Length: 519
Image 1 (cartoon, one colour):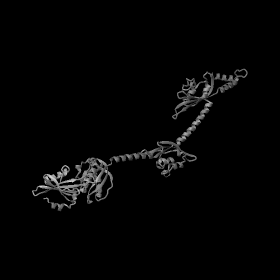
Image 2: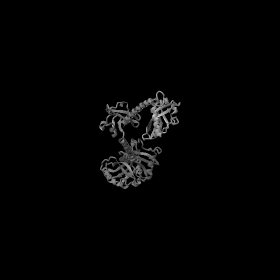
Image 3: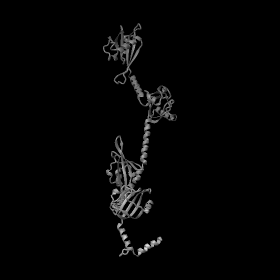
Image 4: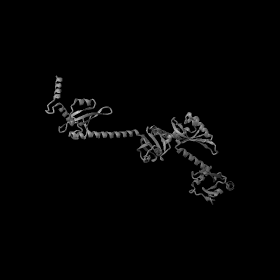
């Protein structure tokens, strides 16, 4: 039962705000308040409580009177540092007729509950929204909770695992369980465990590559009460690492086993790496090359034009270099530089050297030979008539001297079959000789375009390919018309009388011998 003395004795000096509400004629009034409440309720004696303005407060007071039971109401605003949390108790007080006539309202600050609730909300939000799978177990290895990411990764539903002993899920293989228990014991002993990578297993036994982090959980007395295990799925990362490893091995194999010399340079021109072919090609040791600037190596090898060579061209670039270690020694190389780009920025370059000394020497020898052949052709063209035919007898080349002697034009011969061009040599000896792939030499009487006769000393040479097959014939002849006329004149003078012009005794004997041989 309420009395003013009781209120003053028990509640006036309490640190918590206390308010006394009186009900009279179905109306609520502020009756009393202690010192703690006066800062909020000034001059409120006999003040009527406005129901519309204080609906929740009014309703709770009426409910306490109607039920004749204390009612508690908590007022907590989470995540607002400037707002406090309160628990308000509405206790009905009875008159002599055991009918509630007053309501004692006590307000108590419950900041610890606000902090606890905020921590719980934060933990729940973290557990359910993190992409990492999380399991929390107590010190007896019983699972307290798991998050949605755990369910998704290991295919265990939360209701299946809560209260279950952790080992019963077979997430850890039997082979690794013993070692895993040692880690858990270290955690329980207060030791910090660094994250580690391993394999864990789903409900169906499928393996998953994970990164594992373990953390102890302490109570307010700093006693270990549980621990958490965070599993991060690194299957994709491991797959990428494997692909990267394969790529590195491919690159290493290409770099190491390339039969050409290969080196890698940074932006300063320092040689970072080389393959064995590089040392063999340049006849240097690794200590001569590694971590040295390519310009120093170029000077040492006597490369005169290295300054114009930019190893950091925007695109692949090739050039030829000549290395002169001594006055009588030269090495020719073809060098190709390839820029190395990371995020579209040039960070270095590869240089590939190919020793082309044999090719250069062959080119020089070929040039010398071609010059000799050109000189020979010039001499031949100036001293003899030359015609070239392919293996089928088609004329492919004819020089100017041939044209001068024959009175023909080049178009009368080029591209035509030799018989169609009027070259009819029916000597069986000639045909048999060139068919046998041998050189034929002899004297022939030929005719100009205007049917004038002239004599030549002819040589026909078959030209063969590397397989020994005849591809062309070269016909070379010199004009011997005057020589032939002189020979005929000498023969006539030797067989005829110089005065009468009649055959002489030598001629007579020669003809007589012929008759005798036939007889």
